[in-house]
Amino acid sequence: MSLFNKLIVMSLPVAPKFLVHIFAKKYIAGSRLTDAIKVIRDLNARGMCTTIDLLGEEIKNRSEALQVLASYKEVVAAIDQHKLDSNISIKPTHLGLKVDKEFCYNNIRELILAAQNFGNFVRIDMEDHSCTSDTIEIYLRLHKEFSNVGVVIQAYLRRTGNDINLLAQQKANIRLCKGIYVESRQIAYKDPQIINYNFTYCLEKLMTAGCYVGIATHDEKLAWQALALIEKFKLDKNKYEFQMLLGVDEQLRDLIVSAGHRLRVYVPFGEKWYAYSTRRLKENPNIAGYVIKNIFGLH
Ligand SMILES: Cc1cc2nc3c(=O)[nH]c(=O)nc-3n(C[C@H](O)[C@H](O)[C@H](O)COP(=O)(O)OP(=O)(O)OC[C@H]3O[C@@H](n4cnc5c(N)ncnc54)[C@H](O)[C@@H]3O)c2cc1C
Image (cartoon, rainbow, N blue to C red; front, top):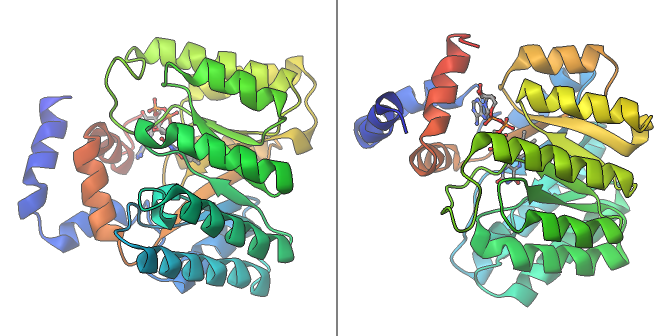
């Protein structure tokens, strides 16, 4: 962690909320669903599709999880009502994974059913390593029953090669990303180059197996390698998409879109934007550096 990133994170507890908002607003659509709808309309008009994330994770009890489920159902209905090109991304701990696994499974299942009624799709985000096995297990159960569900796999995890073998056999729908949580060296690769090798290795395996892949990265080296694989396998446009976070490297985003590839933007919104932004910055101070670089266009 650089001294600069450390300083930013140390100053967070005393930073006024409006200051954090200045940093966060580029990356978060707003606190209300109507804010997200506005952002998505604009992205759709510029040829990008989206996935909506209702901010929050690790709820404390069943009633909070059920509230989250109800809010997500509203999101799915609003996507249909406003004719938006968007699906949703959910976090298992937000829907009760740490309260009770079966309860979480049932909540996700209910949401997938609601999405299915509108012809929509649910992506299950991947959280820290304590959730990996449960998330994959829940996904595989749901994948047997539904075609409108996908999961996320993190290239930085040492276990990912094995997980990919299993998921590829099942023709899973995968978003592949590097992984955002700070994990120990026992759990995750620390060398950025190894993470990149693993990303490409896993991507190739998924493409070879005929899985639908969401290539989630802002790392141009990885985007380039993904493009080379797409060409090598002559991959049909309905077998992959690129995915990027709202507000991050919009130039790369536009380059990918103008080259004719499908690109999905991850659009977070919600009342909990402040808690979410400060916790994320504390958890992974590298993001602070990224944010500063992005704001000042230092690429
Ligand atoms: C659509 C999408 C969904 C994701 N879902 C998950 C998930 O479910 N689970 C999970 O663990 N991780 C998720 N991630 C995060 C991912 O794991 C990485 O932490 C993140 O994308 C940074 O990795 P990178 O491939 O962009 O490469 P990096 O080398 O980390 O970043 C490349 C460049 O992108 C810019 N950048 C990257 N991230 C940010 C940021 N947050 N803010 C500002 N600038 C940034 C920086 O300029 C950086 O130099 C997701 C990412 C995307 C794009």
